[in-house]
Length: 223
Length: 248
Image (cartoon, rainbow over all chains, first blue to last red; front, side, top):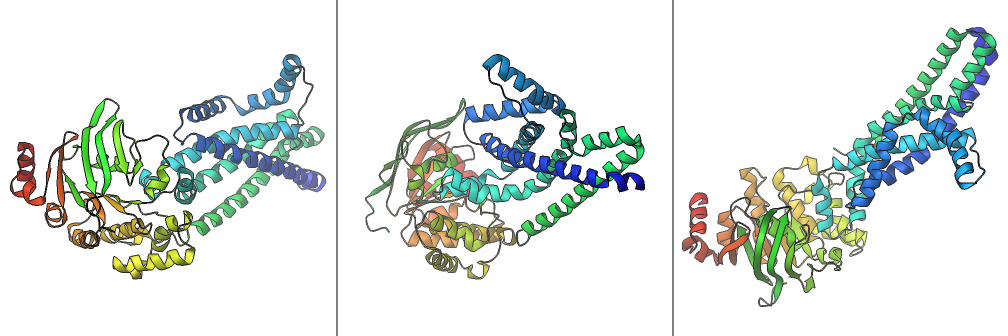
């Protein structure tokens, strides 16, 4: 164990760096997608609601590893044979797309549920004063909804962070991918996977602490 | 506010509203004049609340004509937000913004819609809180107030936009009995000040004392309307008689 940490520790830590980089990219675009599709699923418009529902259903119904293979191997092949465009994604690009699309779908569900949990009377009161739909949404409904959504959003962040491990299959040099390399050299799978597990655990515990502090801060003064 | 009592503030003609197959309003026609206080009474499910909510387009009328303040709000193209600035509404369940304290609840609309600067709005808010007797609650959050206090804040919030018309949707129905009086007192003052008011209520005493006109609704139509004396002491329609026998 100490020998692995001594020899490959820095390699594994930099691999964790890659994991975090991928998770951040995925979460960033995932949040954007989540907000767009989440709002699209609550506005009074059948078309945007349908689009949002289809998106969520597709992503929920497809395992992420299939999505990863599809984006990394399938899409470039499709672009070339159908449209004649030669383009290949780097593992980071493909990984970001997968995570973002995946995280975005779940995030949009969290946002939809969070908004719908707010008493419609809040929106009506704001509208009755002359505020537009979006002003009412951003001033009155969302601030209340976000507070309730935070635990679910943190949960989704953690899931997305762990989902980066799936992208080892397309060769992105994140922690699981690098751990496999270490085992291929040392044959010490028990020690290596134990170290990897503890590394994930530490990062996620830190994330959870940050989230708790944020939640406390947001709920201060309001009841 | 109320010098010219002959000016029509709200004109409603043959208003119909259905939710799916269910007809809730089946042709309501009435005119409400400047400074008039109209109480709408009737059994639950009679369409009173829907009628009120059509007046500021919280419900879209299925057909018919509604003109408020010379704005034809039954028209699809009308900028309803502009019209609503001039129509205050008070809800049965208060609907104070839970994420804001009392003062910010009142200041939100005037500041956001650029009717007043922050300083002006704060001054207005404090004046309004004084008139409803709650200046000491400016920094409280809605969850810290009693029902009666919440409803008085809600009235102050609606008044902050300096509306010409106030709509009240069963403003005392969700209150504990001992808090009804404080809310009705604020509404009485408002009526005395000449505000045009449409009040959906089960408070027959209030309707009798304050209303210029009482409308009795049942089955989505106006069954009978008249002065409080006419309605309460000498109702013509047998449905009105039956209803009043139950509630008085």
